[in-house]
Length: 332
Length: 281
Image (cartoon, rainbow over all chains, first blue to last red; front, side, top):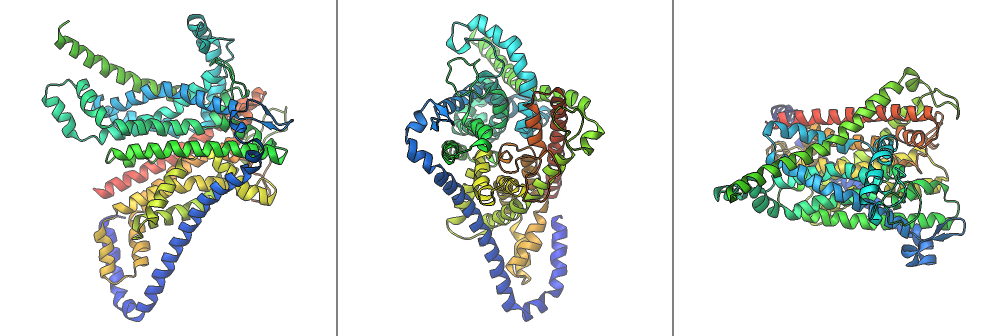
């Protein structure tokens, strides 16, 4: 409905208004109160959901936390049969796969953001931006499917042997090529987080005032020098925020990683070896948790994941907010 | 090399590098879509839309129950996500309260960053544990909670865009505040709110992780909302990690259908936004 329509709508209301106004001014107050009441009820429900979520995670993980204490975080052994639960292999897997993902996604994402905001000819910007946003809309399970049947075999046959023969002296690239493993998970994560870094980064760069650019250009800087000395430093905290938003997503990503990481709770220096992440152990074992303690241990992993991602996201939002006007970009 | 040439060369190189980064970002999109169209397109047939899965080992069958299940789960999620998201957004945009609106806004942003599998755990403790079984309802709650922050934040921002003059016109005519909100503000913001809702639906349509231990999946037609229900995303996951070639084929077909649904909904969102932009002009 356009503004004009709304005005017309308002007009037709006006005809009946004096009557309504004189007869029912008392009822109007009740209508307002009722409506306000509805809004507060909804807000109360929303707050209850948030509190309930934290409460449920804490309460359900108490048995495991009491039983294992800090050794839960540092324990190496995950043995549901003996009811001995240490989550370190999963924490390690989450951290390493996210690190591999970010190592690729950060330079590519920031580079793409610079291209979209500073370099690309104007007619190219919208379509390329649209394609990158499409990448963000692809469901995780579809990336996982592609990872199993396309990426992992490709890594096993071509990439991992090549890396092994050239960089094999590094512990990172030792061992037999499995295809599925840390490297595949990291690659999938970089594909999934890069659209976030690129689109939020673009918003941040576009929020940098043009006077910054004009000042540098007036001093005779080339366009890259303008970007380097005037645009990037101004948007730095926002760009770090964009990266952290990507990181938050990488840490919590479940399905695609579960499908390509190999799901073996071991710590290995090699990126070729299979691993396990906190999110994927939840996906794989939650329905199989036979004892209360087992379930509690899984929920505690969920709680750890929750705390870490909330911290990363809160920090990210704070940083993006510091670059004025970029707030809109962080919504998705 | 003179300093001028060096600056010129560096400028060119960095421009090319940033373009290469953008190209590399888009490359996976092309690869994923290429395989999806090829593998999914050749595996898709009428049976896929009209049949339920065949018993293990028998080729053929389809995912009719999963397609319907996904639609039902989206409907259930909207039952929770839309009222809370839209009314919550209305409250945050309009309220004169001192602190509560910014608290709600912050919490919505926090919720948006919570991994979907953790939201699944919440739905599990809230619905599955008391009911003592997996159910469509639990899946709907999980997806609904995921929708809330997306709908809430878009609604809020759109409502802020509604010109104050429209509101004032209504109030000056003596309309009660709630009528101004419902009849004038919400109607004006309709297109924008639709966009937010569609973005949220596109997001939950492909969600798998929170459904694994709430909706659980089902190889047959569901019998009531308090029973486990199939979903396209769960089915794709289960078939992808199975050892059977025929199931792999169906997983590709399912993924193609899933992504078609997601993009169709995203397209509607985009069209609604275009209406909005035209309106703003």
